[in-house]
Length: 151
Image (cartoon, rainbow, N blue to C red; front, top):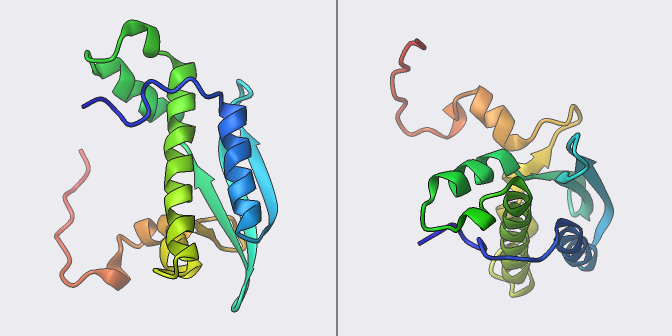
């Protein structure tokens, strides 16, 4: 099956606005958009006051990776294998993910601290995921694999 949302025609600005509305309803008190050189939104950051204090989260997209998936998938028509389509797809996937996470929070299945931590930023702007990756996930590993030397 082709990548999720590969047929979407919803514009990036419309999808980003939908995500912003969901985050605002979920008590985000600030939302920031980041743009690529071509003017396409590449990430959203938002702040939420929590029981532990103010937390900032960074939701990136990787439009280039989505574009590479599109280009390699022969099941997708050539007309849909564009960078603009990749941007629309990437943001629809992020919207679907955010919507699902917020629905789980609203239903009481989880709380914000359970689903958004990989995207939580420290004071330098690095996400929890980036910090853990730098540390090769050592604090979480039950058993570490030997590293392979880079070629």
